Image 1 (tube, helix red, strand yellow):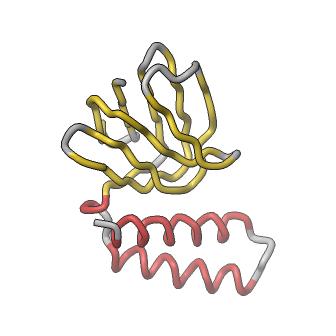
Image 2: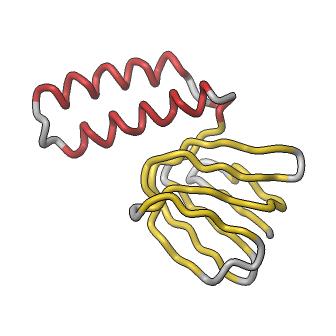
Image 3: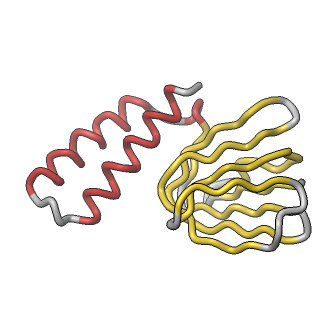
Length: 127
């Protein structure tokens, strides 16, 4: 199937894949060739693309996924491949988010920042 992964900054991936696994707001979902039509909102999490030259793992910060006519299109607010992640920056963001969550456990923005930092660190470590 054809896969297109686009962020506001760039086209991060365009090519053929045998499988795509990504995280929606309802949980993880996998797409294989000729998957039924689908539209969903993405959550913060990892996305894996089984491309012809290996598995590509990316950190995604929300967005949308659409599957139609054997094409998977992922539009993400922010997305980074493992080699693009600044681990030191992600660690700083993680510590700041932990402090913010500790100060106000109901702060959804701080919880999202914490999850985004953890996701980037996990993806960078998977490289």
